[in-house]
Structure formats: structure tokens, C-alpha cells
Amino acid sequence: MSITKVAVIGCGKMGQYHIENMLTMRDSTKIEALVEPSEKMKKCVSEIFEKHEVSLPPVYNSLDELLQADVDVEVAFIVTPHNVHFVQAKACMEAGLDVLLEKPMVMNTREAQNLINIRNRTERLLVVAFPGSLSPAVHKAKELIAKGAIGEILQVAGVVHQHWRILGGWRQIPEISGGGFLFDTGSHLINTVVDILNDNVERVFAIQDTRETLVDICSAITLKTEKGILVNLTAAGDSIGCESEIFIIGTKGLIRTGAWGEKLEIKREGEKDFAPVEYPKSKGVWEQFLKIRSGQMENPCPPEIGLRFAELMDMIKLSAVKGEVITREVLLSKEVSQPQGSLLDDTKTVY
Image 1 (cartoon, rainbow, N blue to C red):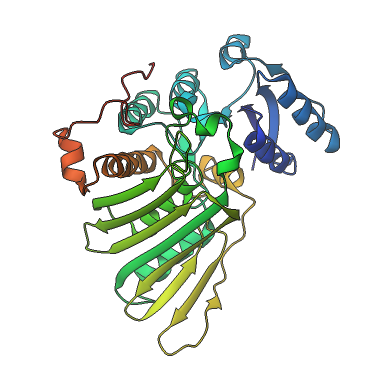
Image 2: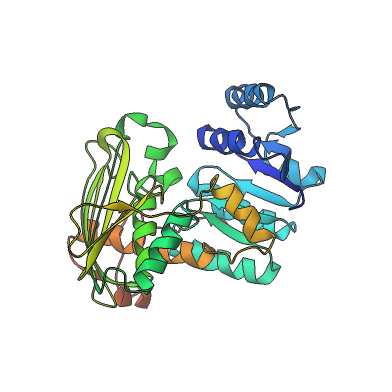
């Protein structure tokens, strides 16, 4: 694999996490530029480069500065607050760059549809960095299901919990984050479940609690897919640690995995305990992106996956606000009126 020249856009905690991993992959990756306006984050990221004995590349205060500088890069890895994902991905693809874009892809369904159009027009590679969709464990789970390893899928139960409420910051400002715990950490749970099932959600009922914040902290969601599979999801953002469980319940067995595709176990009919399932190990989303870009694998997380997630989140938000079941058909028909001030109001989106 040749060395890919990349610019990392955003050097906050998640950006630093990815950079730390990328610096262990110098046989395939060279970070040529960074974009970060915060002096505090610049200092943190410089210490990471120093620890790995790698020279700190040029650091720009904005994406515009980077693009105007005409730096020799092929890829942008965007790791910024949710409300700027659309405009930054658009700018990078129009500048001729391939893009790995942190989840959630965009703020709402309209942005997702527009980003797909831009991808088509520019013919650039766009991969959404959902660890679940890019996880070999999730790919293996889908293979097992397709082979009938646990029979007919009846139901799915999933839970994710985290000590998230105390974090504060931009993630709890609706205009920046686009939602609360469910849209942030909970997005992994939702995306991985629908990815494994490979089925559109037909109807949704959701109840949410803000826990005296401006965004959802706790969510209880019931879904029904077009194939008739029932799904129950719990997202608890005022708990401890950060963990998840997903149970795929079939007529002849169970599959257990996690929201990030970090594990995979199976229990077949007649077996007492779950047994681990072997699957290829991965260094994470950047390594998988390189495999996609080099043609070693198909893109398992294109912007169409981001659109599917955006549609489902819009259904969930609307159901929670209106207190009723929301169908995909009604959402896409635009017959439903959005409550004023709801998180579905995207009239302020800047293109």
C-alpha cells in the first residue's frame, strides 16, 4: 500500500485519538497538515507528535486557510463538531480531496441528500467513520445471518450507556450538535443495528428525557423494520463508563456484539453459553478507509448509510416531540409538520 497524504481537520479529543492511531501507521500514512483554531488543542496535538518522534506538520486555523495554501494532500479526515460536517465535506470534495468524515455524517436528512449529490458530482470517495459499519466483526455477523446461522431474525435488543451528561461543551448545544446523547454516542448503536439488519425502518416510537439539559440524555425507542423485525433500543447518557450490548435474536440462536463492533459471540440452539466468533482484527476506521481507497474492499459506509441514519434520527426526534408513532412514509412525504424550534428545523443550515 502506498503512503497516503492526509490533512486532519479538527484536533479535539476525537481528532487526537485518531492522530495517535495514524502515527503508528507510518508505512501507509503521512499527516501533511492539521486544522485547529484552539491553542489548547494545538498544544495537546503537538505533544502527541513529539511522543511519536514525528515533526509537527503545518497547523492552520481554518479549513479555508488550508485549501488556499494548496498543501499537497489527497485526503481530508474531518473530525469536527457536527454542524460543520456538511460545509467542510463539501469544500474538501470540491477541492478534489477524498474524505473520511466522522459520524454522524450531517445534521439532518436534507444535508445528507445534498452531500450525496455533491459526492456524485465531484466523483470523490466519501466514507462515513462509523466504527460499526467499518468493523470486521459486524461484517462477520452479517455473513452469519445471511447463512442462516441463527435462523430467522425475530427481534433485536440494544443498549448503550455512558457518563455523558456531565461532559457539557458543544455536544450539549443543539445548534452545534444536532441532538444529544442519542445523536452522539448513541448513533453507534442505531447505525450498527440497522446495518446488521440491512433493512429500512418502517415505523418508530420514541420517548426521551433531557435530564434538565438542552438535549436528550435518556432515550427508549421501539422500531419495526420493513421485514417485520422488532427492535428495542435504550440509550442512557447519565450512567457510568461507556459500554454497549446488542443481541440479535433468531429462531435458532443469538448473536451478541457491540455498538462499535468491538466483539462478536454466538449461541446456537442447544448450547449453554455464548462462544466467541473469530474475525479479522482492525486498527480502526482509518485503516479500513485506506483499504477502501486502495480498492482492497468495497465501501461499507458510503453517504447513503449516513442518509439512512439521518432519516431514522429525524423519525426518532419527531416521534419524541409529538408523542406518537412516526412512519418513514410520512416523513419522506413531507406531510408531517415539524414543531417550531424542534431539532428537525434545518432552515438555519448554511450551504
